[in-house]
Length: 427
Image 1 (cartoon, rainbow, N blue to C red):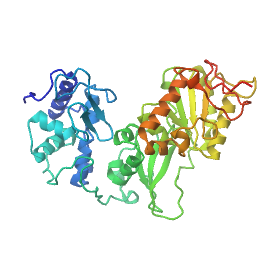
Image 2: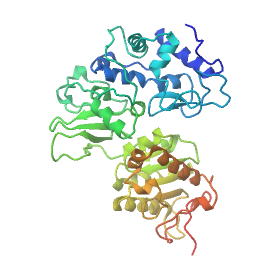
Image 3: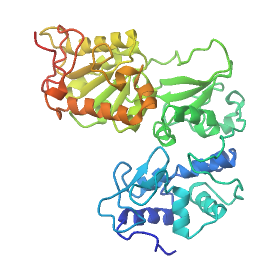
Image 4: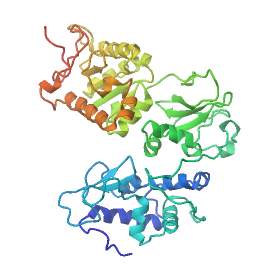
């Protein structure tokens, strides 16, 4: 196929096309979708799923998703002006494309294969990313995000309570034991689960990274997102209610509560900044934004972090506790602060920790909303900006004027053993 359309200086695009060529030959550079799950959905959803493969292709080609790229279409592009937009799953050039115009996976396949008819492009995409893809192509018209494409229609899914052991999928690599009424199923088998996560800003790729599943309570028919944590414990958070009085969280009482993503305390580089939140979903969102995060899985579980205090101190980690902006959040944040640092001259552990709460933190989008998840939904870019500032302050990258931390009480030390991060104001 001729690549006359491509700017020869865009070396990264050559690598992308190499990945597509290998995928077409049958190599699995990018994970393929299960044929059964793909066929259960309508044509509009199939197109959306295929379009969302673009970041996987870019990653397989070693292309950074958070940096400007040399435009693959116009030349010369002395100042890289193309960038991947994770909100639309597409590439956009700020120099040669009108506002709102993008280059998505289907556009790329069309250019690569010299095709203009969408049914032919769709068939190539299906061959690339769906297992045993030799089925007829849907005749529904294609609509890019933001155009008048119509709502996604769901097809009925098999009730988890009626699923047989033969159809039970592999769980998620954890040590959970699967009972007859506790079958954790792939998110693709219930579009409502994916839609729930999407509304919270969590992408399908991130959900796969953290091995999220869904589960149906056989007694109430309520459905839950299942989030694996350390050991056998998992968080089950309702996303589809059928009963009147079932709690939002229905976690197993047989397993002791553990941290979500607690392994990051051991695996991240020394002197790293780690955000601490209550909700596992908020921690997943922070990780998706490029930060390191753990979750205590409710305000009352702050002692789980105290049990890791030796690891935190040994690795000289810098904790930023993003408390929920309610009384319970404030209480657990201060309890963790005191548990790690002690009071007065009595320092329990040589660690760095800042407690962030609306009652004593500088006003920002993080103090305006209940938690980081709600702030993210309100304004993604402003939330990332504030989080980056908190991270830079913890690492000592800001000036003294920019690094002022307001603490609730001058008698509560927030002094760090690593250089004064979060020091209490002097009298």
